[in-house]
Each structure stands twice: as structure tokens, then as C-alpha cells.
Length: 537
Image 1 (spheres, rainbow, N blue to C red):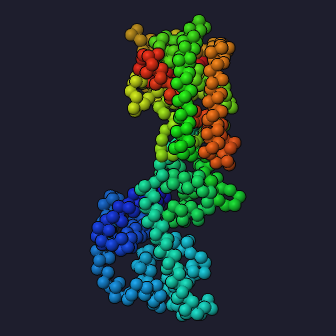
Image 2: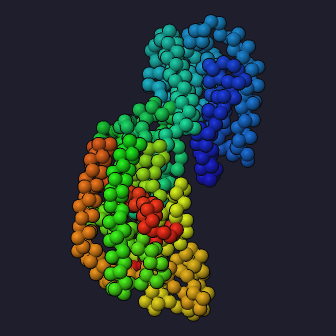
Image 3: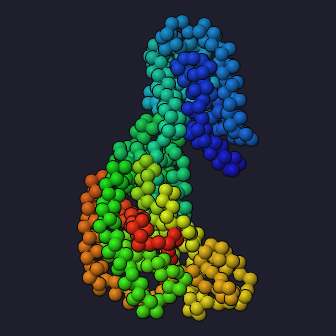
């Protein structure tokens, strides 16, 4: 039963998001009148939603919806004359509420539509709601209602008239909901840290919550205000808000209003941020590359193994590494994992208006090791672009190896490789080879496909990097860049997010994405590898 309910709820969302607009245009073609098309669309929607609420699960959802649409149109066409016979004059239905007929709400209330009527009652004040419930749900006459409430017959009729108008507004909201759903706000999302419970991705896969987050970001609002602004019936809104609150994407204030719990960067902010990153890259790409060459030579002197890479690819790794250290030295420690979440994760999130990607094509992926050995870490830099095909050779899958493999990788590194036959039938080895993390030599020797850096030697290398005059000059240039980025984030972000401004700076500081193409396009890097990784052990 639970599975059926879940499926029906999913289909309800699918219908609201994908069919309302299409149904309106279908009805418009059939009726030739926008007002009649709206009425017919709502009639079809009520039938579909009522059936789903009762647990009807069609085998072919789209065909089922359109069958209902065609059937309701046929009924509507047949009844059109009858409706005209009942209503004389444009305003008659507003006031001529018959004592014994439930048909005065423009066919909105049928016996099979009671459940949906109850939902729409959420929009009506109690003085009107009580009259509607008594008349339409309890079946009482106007005279009986008047007597029980100590009201005149005229007062009851007027309240029913007002309720009719409010219910119509609710139906108009449903149509607006349909429009916003198939033409929604476009937001991209980037996260950092770990998400063991599936948050926040499980809460932002659909269009409706994205629209809610956008609205709450611009206008702190109550549930009712969000419902009106987005044209989403209140019960649906409550469900969506509950999900977003649970995912810690919405915050409820003391006055009952909701705020988006993270920064959604507008296009203007992204443009300014990218401009700042681009300036830094253009001014410093050569200096970083030259310093990377010196670091490579020093690493080899320290005994750090770069044999898995060409000299050029190894220099590329250290160039990326230098850029990362420049950023990390200027921002708070653990900036990307600073958030403690109820689901056990430590993830942060930023939204990008218009689905744009200020992160460009370059990302960092790493793995901090296993429970057995916290010293192990896999670190990688990735450069892939759908536009710029300079980097085309992918060494690895798009994320880091599993934690339980790092111990084995470290053993291979310490022993300078192991004969594959000696490992035995271990499926993880074959998978790691297929994913690019391991290679097998012609002699059958299994090796780690990465730069191999012992942790103690890494400390020596970092001390050397930070001691150079070149790095100090670059650090000052990066500090100026970070300070400018902070000003931009403060300009566009909401003040209540102030304590997290450093995080949004870090997520927007994508100098790496501008540096990589410059190294390649200016002839400094002549290879075509898309990923550059190291194992720290």
C-alpha cells in the first residue's frame, strides 16, 4: 500500500509539472475561448488528481491522462448547453445559489472531487469555510445553515458567493502552478564535503523545490505567501517545505517565515567573480607554471616518484597543486567541510542562477583515506570542457577510488609494484585497472597510476614551496583576488548568510578553471591529459 501511495504521489507531481500547460493548449484548440479552456483544463485536472488520490495507478500514464482529457471534453461539450440553460446572464451564477443543487461552483464540486475540495478549503477563512462544508460536504440546505449559525438566508448566500470566488482563485493558482512548473527557475547546484544521507541532492531533483528556494531566497515568506507567489496549493507546498527543511536547505525564522539556507549566486555575481578569477589567471599563469617546474625538480630530488607521468603531466599536477595551496593558505581550515549536518554529513552547497557553471570545467576530487589509516589520501585535479577539447585523455573515472582500496594502493607504492598474478582473483583490482587507478606493465607488474608522495616528503615539499620568493609573490596576488571576491559575495549575498561568506568565496574562486587553458593555449603544456592525480601515503 505504501508503494502505491508513493507512486501516486510521484505521478501527481509529474502531472502538475508536465501536463498542465499542454492540457490548456489542448482545451484552447477545442473550445476556441481562453476562459472556457481554463475551466475545461481545471475539470480535467480535477479528475486526474482525484483518481490518483484514490490510488489509481495507470499502466501507461500519458495515454491515461489524454484519455481522461478527451472524455472530459466530450462530457463538457454535451453539458455546455445545459449550463447555459441554468445560468441566465453573466452574473447569475454568482448569486443564484439554489438550495438543493451542488452545481453552482462551475462543476468544480462533484461527488468524486470532494477530496480536492477539502484541499482548496485551506485557502478560505473559517467564516466561509464553515458554510461551504455545511452546504457542499454535509448536504445541508441554505435555510438549515442559516438557522444553525444564527444567520439570515441572504448572509449565507453571500458567504457562499464569496467562497465561490475564493475557490476560483485557488483554481487559478493551480494553473499558474502548471506554468511555473514547465517553465521554472533555472538553478545549478555545486556541493562540497560528504553527503551520507543523500542530502541535499534528494531534495532538489525536481522543479518545484527549486522554485520554492528561489522565491524564499528573494523574499522571506510564510507557507501561505509561498503558496500564493508560486501558485501551488497549500497542502503540496507544506509537503515540499517539509522536505526542504529536512534537507536543511530552508530555514524557518522566529516570525514563521522561510529563508533559503544557502547562497544562490545571481548571473551578475557569477560574471563579476569569473572576471576576477580570469584577471588573476592571465597575470600569473606563467609564474605559476615556472614555479611548478622548480617544484617538480625538488620533488624528484626528495625521491617523490613521478614515473607514472610524463614530465609535462607531472609539472601540470604541481601547477594545480600550487594554485590550491595559494587558496588554502588564505581561507579558513576545512572551509569545504565546515558544516555539521543532521544527516551525519558535513556538506556545503551553493546555487548558480540560470544553471550557469562558475566552476567552469575544472574540479578537485579527493579521498581522505580509510578508518584504518587516516594518513592515506588520493588527490586529483580534473580539466574537462565540452567546449575546449584541448584536454581529452581521461586517466581515471570522475571521482576518487574507494577508501578501502587506498591501503592496497599504498602497499603497491611502498613495494614499487606487485606482480598481478600474485594478487589473486580480486575483482577490485580489475575494476581499478578499468577505472584507470592502476596500470599493468608488459611484465605483469601492477602499479599505481599516480604521482606517489610519502607524507613526510610531502611536508618537506610544502615547506620548500612556501619558502620560495615566487610563492610569496603569488600569495600576495591571490590575497588581493580573495579580498575582491569577498566584496562581490557581500554585495550579492543575503546578510543572514554572513557567517558563511568565506565558504561562498571559496566555492566561487575558480582560478584553476582559467589557468589550465592558458597553460595549454600558450604552449606551456603540450599534452592532452584531462586528469592529474597523486597518492599520499
